[in-house]
Length: 197
Image (cartoon, rainbow, N blue to C red; front, side, top):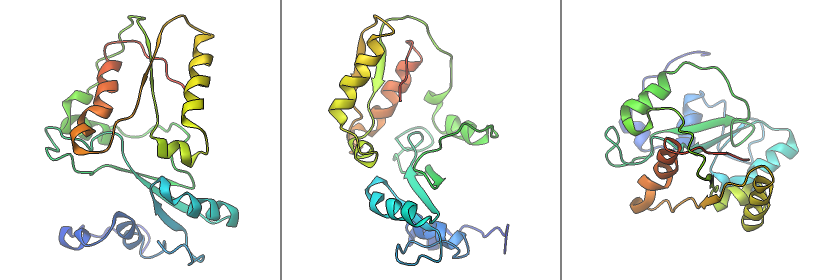
């Protein structure tokens, strides 16, 4: 059944979690059961770190699913802000290499939300914007959120005299979803940003 395409049945998939849908789409070559060590494990979200750690310890493959940062907030093409874009990564929780890929997905995102259209950097040299990760991500990587802010600001100040503005990632509640990503993204179109990891 390698390479077989199965039509998406909206009714069936509504009854399945995203993890179960991936397992089904794999022809049951994957599992959501952490105890079934005969198959790669599908996990969703940083709260499953204990399962990920066990997979790493056991040398077991896993597929990590998380909600994408872009495209999942209210926009022209997604008025309700439904979570329709997701990231699936094998044996890690984020992609760690940049790959050349077709532009079709990015073009679909821009079509869905024209605010994402790239208009180029502006070089105003006014400030450095440090957008903080979600505290759950800090816990996943086992580092102290507040300590990281202080250390990162200190490192940045060694290379520039520009002020560093820290932006905290907002809550996932509907009232803030539209602004928590778009505000820094919109800022990127109007000011120079220095990004750190």
